[in-house]
Amino acid sequence: MCRVLLVLSAIALQACGSSDAARQGDSSGPIEWKPPEKECPRYKELHDGDGFELRTYEAAEWAMTTVGKEHEPIAALFAGIGNLVSYFAGANEANQTIEGTVPFVQAFHLPFHEHGGHHHRKHGRDGDPPHHRRHRQHDYVFALYIPRDLQGKAPKPSNGTNVRLVKTSEYSVAVRSFSGFPKPWKVLRELRSLWRALEDSESDIRFHREVFFLASYSPPQQLRHRHTEVVVPVDLQRTEDVFSYI
Image (cartoon, rainbow, N blue to C red; front, top):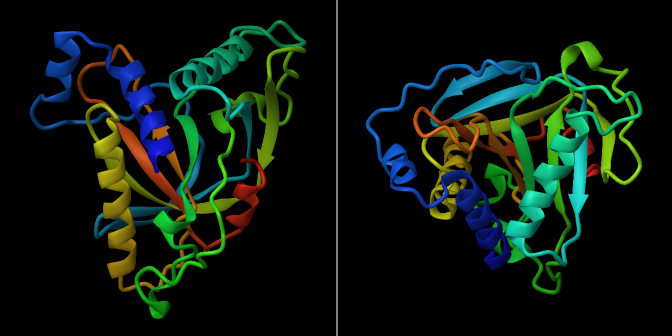
């Protein structure tokens, strides 16, 4: 969990900066989020209420980059952003500038003792994690959606960009949205709130605790009306496919 907190701190630092304006932006009044102007991956909304959304995302192509686990979190974050931005800015075989998309996604792996494995409400709130299994550190994984008009025909990344194109199958997730900057305490609070909402749901939803995604829709310079989501895979469709890419 310490490693997760360090990475979240890096994200918050990159997003917030240290200006008074940024701090004021985070502490502003009620947030009225507007849908982003940039293109987003398509999904079907299955449920919205009780503290979470259920979505099924279409099969799609993403640009992904992996940064080695030996890097410090802030260095990994900037490297991941730099790799993806370079690809979209023309570091590809066609020298093509690609229209930017949202969200910027990062995958987080949790220590096994923290998440307790798969969750199914009929088998108790947390399950019984096997104590012999050790948590191992994972590389950092970041991703951006390929625009719809380039799906299936996006130019290959140039050599040395450390970016790969990945096609995901249809998959389902539970989502909880929040405003302000993604400070570590806030992200973990929203993640646990999402877990509790799923546990308390009348629908018997099986979900995964070993990984979650942080989806950021707002650029660093945006101080107000920010939108971020914590995302957890659920077993409605082929969510196991998602794990093979991270």
